[in-house]
Image 1 (cartoon, rainbow, N blue to C red):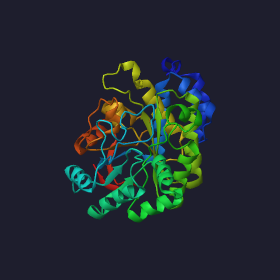
Image 2 (cartoon, rainbow, N blue to C red):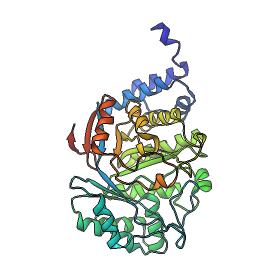
Image 3 (cartoon, rainbow, N blue to C red):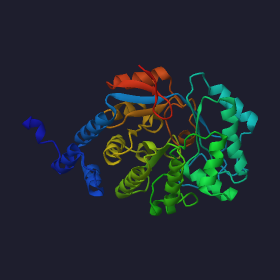
Image 4 (cartoon, rainbow, N blue to C red):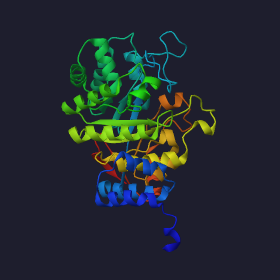
Length: 366
C-alpha cells in the first residue's frame, strides 16, 4: 500500500474526510477537486457517494426527442441549432408534421417525449400549448417532459401571463415535467456573454421553483467547457443544490459538455476526457441532494459514458431515436442507441441496468 499511497494527492485528504463524514462540500472544496490531477481518487469518492444513494443500479429510459421548431429569437454563442424565420433550414412543424414525425420514432414501449425547441417569436403561446395537448391526446400513456426553464420565461413574455400561469396552462394540456435545458451556467457574467437574450439566472431558477411548487418534478443541466471559470461551474452546482434544499423537485443533474460549431472541429475545441470525468464526479460530490447524476452519452460518447458509471453517475439517459441540437453543432456520436446497446454499456461497467420512466420508477431490471 505504501507504493500507491504516495500517488494520492494530499490536497484531497481533507475533502475525502468530509465526504466520508457525509459533510457538505464548499466552493473551496470543489476547487481543490478540480485543481487536483488525482482523477482516480476523485472518482473513487464520487463512486462511493453514488453507491450510498443508488447502490449498483444504473438507469436509462426509452424516449423520443421532439424539436417542433428551430426558429429562435435568441442568439446564444454556443448554439448551431437556431435559425431566423426566413433562413435556409428554418422549420416549424404543424400538427400533421408533428404527428408524422412522432409516429416514425414511437414504439409501444416509449416512456417519454422530450420536447424542446427554439424561442420562436413568430408563434403564439397557444402553439406550444397545442403541441403538448396534441401529443397527450394521441399518446396518453407517454410522459410529456417539455420545454426548458428559459422557454417557460419566454412563453410568459409572449403571452403576458405569469410564469405560474404559463405552467398551469401547459399542465392542463398534459405537461408532466420540465426539461433541464436553458440553464447553461447560472451566473450573470456568463449569461451576459453567451446567452444574453434568454432567461436570467434568477428567472431560470424561479421557473423551476414555481414548477416544483405546482407539484412537477424537473431536470437540471450545466453546459460546461466554454468560457466559464471553475468557480462559475461550482456556483452553478451550488445554486441547483440550494434550490433542491428548498423544494426537493429536481430528479437529476446533467453535466453537458459543450459541443463545437462543426463536427470537423479540432480535438482542442472539445472538452477533454479528464475534464468530463472530473466534472461528472465533482457534480456527484457537490450536488449531494439530487438523487441522480446523468452521463449524457450524446456529448461525451458511449465509452466515456460507460467509464462515468464508476465516477458517480447513475444514469446514461436514453435511446433518443434522433437527437438534433447537439448534432447541429459538433457532436460526433450516433443520434440514437438501442435498448440492447444501453444495457450492454451498463453491464460492461459492472452495474445493474434499470429501465425507468421519467420519474425513476422501475420498468424493468436487466
